[in-house]
Image 1 (spheres, helix red, strand yellow):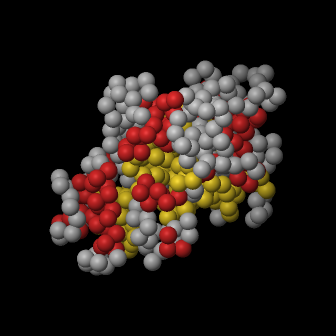
Image 2: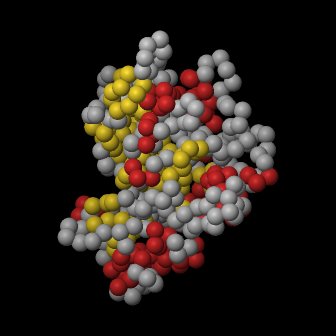
Image 3: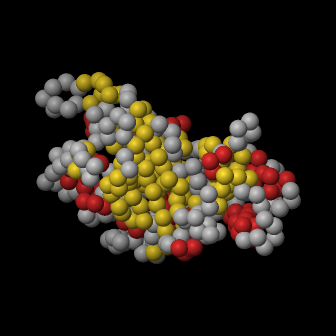
Length: 390
């Protein structure tokens, strides 16, 4: 049973609720949900401390890699009917919630084509990449309180922008609301403050992966970003999948990144380069407008973690690390409308008629991702969001 990438090879975790019941941990299998709290109560799953009866995955994630592996092995046996035939709750009968309590949110800038396109748009005629880009994973600290589960509507933000460089700034709704196609890596086990996490030990801290839409108000962002970077242009909403795909499910899809790391990074970031072979797409109002692959990421999550902690900063259970927008070399592979429309200079023609430079009120964006095919396919949970007026 592959069920579109949600078969035994996947088994992603989330938080669900049925009418009149408390939220709890579930695992998606096909078009249904396994109630892990109920399975533990029946003695079919080991759950010391009742972590599956919690309204967030944090307590389970904090148990660490051995518990993750044992639980995944047990669930694989259960869905195969080896030990029992557990009840599946239909997806239509549950509400999916934010899967984990977000501790800190850091968004990186790890796709070389997206970074270079941004440079060409905003600094025409200059070197596209900043001088530090090939030497470290660049990132900014986002706002964890506005990370929401996919399906949550997103209201157009207000702020200051300066559409006319020869006139004073104006205040009002963003006219350049954008989508960003990213992966989000979820930290399961914390690290100790003052002790850097080595690049070869970083994987033990990563519980799983979500799709992530880093909604961006480009006009607000452009005016505010000098000198300290994004603030109101990013902090109003970040949408993630309601399902967290375990790193173990994606292990068969590790592959070489499509862009070599040149020059070699500093010693603390040095590893055999790798990425995840996950096909990705952006859908706008039912039409696919971009397709790319996570192999376009230049920096790995292990390098992101090593860099984040090299100064002594610590990881916490529930930290969310965004990859940054994932883009390829061709126009159809660009992971944002900023790039697809070249900041509005080249409107994107839609097959259904009309065109877009940036998002309009009422637009619905869906991000999708899948690795492999057939029974071995592993799908990431969709991220859906509709734009509401300011």
